[in-house]
Length: 627
Ligand code: DCP
Ligand code: CA
Ligand code: CA
Image (cartoon, rainbow, N blue to C red):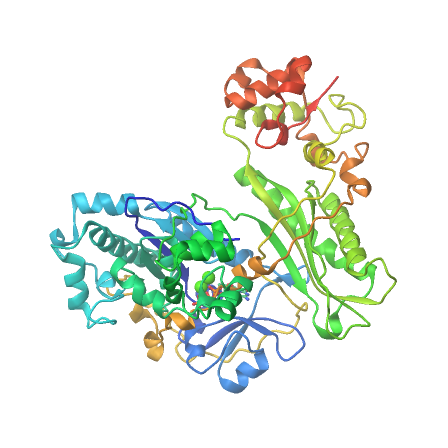
């Protein structure tokens, strides 16, 4: 249920930046022959040339759409170049795209708080940067306004659309503007400069929305694509929302949006203005009612989170039509592959970022052989996450079996699985101050190998097992959670997409590496005029996926391996086991107070019951080995 966060009283400047046809741009950078040529990235399978997942703007001009398969795209645009997504373990390997996204994030995060919202988009809070600019070098004082900023689309300017750069220049420099418009003007220039830097340093173009809150910035960023930016002054908001279909608004795509349409006759977000806050609360409850009342006025208090790393990790694969998995052993084989990748990713997140994922989730789509249209969804299942590939594989299989049993109502029916996905979520940082303990533990470990280490009691669980088994033992149930997945993939391809040699083989970006003018001109031909109105704004399918994923809770703890404390001591787990008596008190002093109290509770066990808290404390990360 949507909840309205309190809106800050101070005006803010928020940008939403989204890369243009992202995977295509990554492939075009890898192979400059593809620049300026209609291109799409496909997930190959033998059926109809594979599904398109990213379509370049040149190809869009021919009518190629993401919903098409390769064969259809070839019919619509015979010259299209279809590039196959890299494959590893029989599924898409998105590492190339993820790290390309990180290159961009590294640049965008230099000007303010930056939240990585998906593989190719971020939110930026530029309030402080805009305030500094307003104090030190406000737009009217600049020798020249950057050309890219002059290309901005400012909503509401000159009765709806820009007349041109002169109007934008006047808007950016208007002396009698109110404070929030002046800040927005500074934000417009800052974003334009950032986008030029992104192009210079990564060779990627992006589009942006600049507004006073996240909701409006996100609505604006796809309005003028590719390689352009759209600004939403507060005065333009009523018109913007008056024409925005409710279903296009994040969180109104589902049942709530349908109810607004069917029950209240509300078709656009602006139509909600007819209803009082009280009325909306009466109809939809206090939280949702207030949230609706606020979005009708463009009010949104969501903060930009300071987060450059993903909130969760997920990997999945689809098995359409005849490829559906129909035996437990085939499910196990694929789950093992997916879990192997997931395990590698959470392990590298732990090594590089000192973050621990706490929840493992399994999602599947399934059908029963006696049902033409599935009546019931395969329930998503979650459990505490144990580190180590084989444990993740084992747990995922348990989750699958539990889900299948629910799905079939414990009846012995034929079934098929058309998609499988595993995710790791509830990722937390190892608290500040524990680095020294980590280091200390690592040093200890080097003198204590897994077979003869006597620090742990026989049967003592490894770190991950113990932290979750404590929690699990408390709750006696598996947890609910939501995991967004970056992609679903198809058949393992071996056939290479045939590629005609591109006519303009000279790398457009290489040729123009010295970016002086606007970003837009780096796009070839007619695509620069490609614009999407608000009503055409596509919801990011990744987020849609996140919203669609349903969760459920299963009470299958008793059969779960996490509760079997006598098993599993793999190499990784030993990294985490340590001996209370060997904790250096000076190290404890460095820790946050809450954690200090807890460790002292371990050292003086009589106090432990009162001091050990679950949740945010170090017990989550280390389980003391007792002698
Ligand atoms: N993606 C995917 N599967 C989907 C949707 C997207 O694998 N169903 C991948 C490919 C896209 C990338 O995520 O390149 C970013 O998705 P966007 O929705 O932002 O679309 P694009 O960046 O491709 O195009 P646009 O210029 O419209 O943002
Ligand atoms: Ca994009
Ligand atoms: Ca996107």
